[in-house]
Image 1 (cartoon, rainbow, N blue to C red):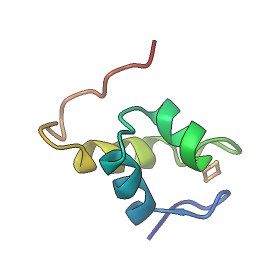
Image 2: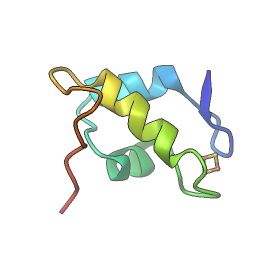
Image 3: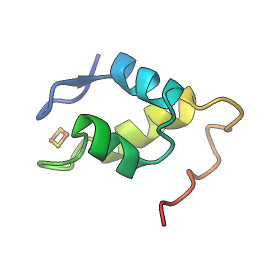
Image 4: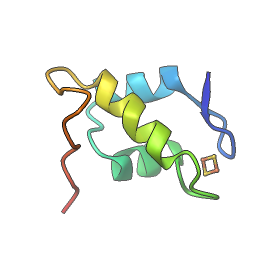
Length: 66
Ligand code: FES
């Protein structure tokens, strides 16, 4: 499923980015371009990342980038 239509980023790519070390929305923006254009994908991308990160509860907020 596409998470970011503007950059054609899928849920699978977000999972792969998380496995490669991405842990914030800023990481996804840098690595995949997620949320770089219209920004509508931000909350969905954040949710996908949360689900992909090991040991992070779905209700737990993501760590903020410095
Ligand atoms: S849908 Fe991701 S930037 Fe537009």
